[in-house]
Length: 614
Image (cartoon, helix red, strand yellow):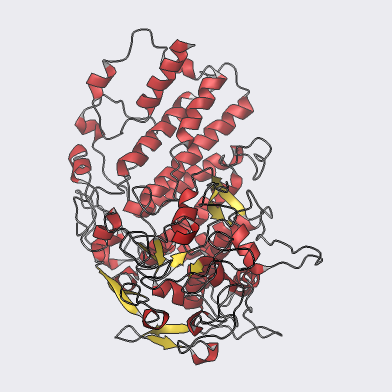
């Protein structure tokens, strides 16, 4: 048994070696003489299963925005990570080609090699034990995982280097390792073809619940990845973007198409609708007790992330969710208040009447208020609710349920009894010197807000500490609905499904739907803007905004320049605090649309060109 364990460790190392080089011959010279042959692994069910589990382990968790785990929120216009010694603080103002933080190019090529090795070796010739149907399913899962890893590369770096089906030998020459990038469209077509090839042998959605293998690749996940992929591929960043006219390989091959193709939106819409038409998933709605099925929007919107493997979940991962609770909770409740929503993120939430409160900004950063919404920034409320105390700013009164689920603001009430009581919850004082606000330490939000979405009321960060276990939601049905309506609106505006599925998201959110019926509000004239705003609100703090602003090609406008919050640094009372104030000035240029590829990677592959303007 010791021999097998040693071998499993050895094979895991070999399988995840960088495809673009490592200590090739020296490493191979260290293989012990008594090691089993690689082919022998795939003759045993337990070792084959273990190898596939190792491939699965390359699905990254994206729960912690603070450190080296995941950068997407802290580098978007949605959030400020309060700690100035963390990488994204520097990257938001001075991001250079040599910046190594969050550079996953090498990581995903290791994952791709690992998956390819499984596909190559886990076959009927090698495997003598596993039944053919199960072996075919495992191979399909590995193929789907490889497609997923390629998509992770594509969304971060743009066009990638497509590796041969059979992994390159670890001791290959640098010339054999040197391969050019494929065009963006070629990359998309390849990923789609791999998903389609894997699809027939993948298991049906939700079949893995009894076994506890919740994150196994299945047909629902496959269609969801395709939906997201094709939506990104249809978007302005890579669909006829002439800014990239000079983005070419060394041989002159164009890497981003230069002609807009509206049919790409149709492909994206069709992919989303195919998942919807499985009729396996439904928006999560939690019925109130003894109401005959009536549900509470706020409870449903919070518990969609807390109720494991609910009707809306498509792709989940067992992850450490402590960061959600720790960074979202205020100090008196044992937390850090370290993830601060920006003022623009706060402004994006609708009013309870379903109308947007802010329609834009003046040159000085002041808001253009929509008078029909009833929104005002003048005065305070004399009435306390379950969401806020009397004296709270009118900015936060009569907002939609998603706002109160997601945003902690000055004089809002905390989500459980920590730091207070059940009858009198903790009231958050976010001004400087307030119990939940600025002080001489580091754990406070520079925007004057903190994220409470994804935090669990069942978690206690005060002694005795208990973290409520739940899955990381990596894909859910609301996203697919929003993918569908966005794509449909671009190629067939006016299609009835646009309002149908957009309204399903709004109905679950507890706000009026668009239309001409009783209780509905007039559909907006700019449906594209309305869909984008709905997406920003519904998917807030779920790692979408970073990629959305880039694929829409608006990051140069919304992520460059002064960023606003409340007067959290200098406001020492409720009145002085409640003023729009610049907390940071960020820099975004064209080069930031795609990630920097490190010079060390360019040195390893002589045909690899870097991304433009770095």
